[in-house]
Length: 203
Image (cartoon, rainbow, N blue to C red; front, side, top):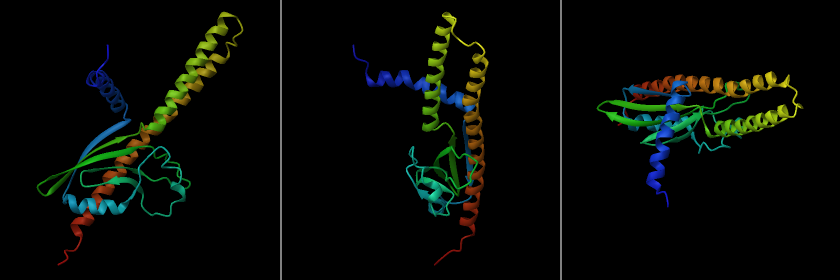
């Protein structure tokens, strides 16, 4: 009996939605809607000049520190929406992990920007999978050793403390990254909209 693709999608979709709800609960995903007094065309044209084109792939941050660009953001921007993140710089300790995706919608003279910021990117997913496998294997080996009286029991508290740091530190870095990118983009978008409104009319 074969499982059809729509059936697999129906089984996976609720789990993905539940996972996203958990990430939102712990502020690893945040959403907001901005209302700006500008047109979509003018705003997108100015935003594109502030963003360097990048695919935001897994290794896209590798050479950020060597870039001579003055733009603070990289990603893709078009008239439907955007996907971008802050560029890394030398001696930057802010750990810019979050990625923002958004959609533009024009309502009369107001531009609506529906934005979602996520700190749980592909690299961190792989990191959590790898360390989870490591601790599961270690726990199984530890339990087997306990059965043979060869396990150094004093190591257990240190391993638990180590696991707490390995899971906890990236968690707080992600939360801080999401909060900071949301604040920075809200400020940047309002600044771009203000520049658009003040731009001289050319005949």
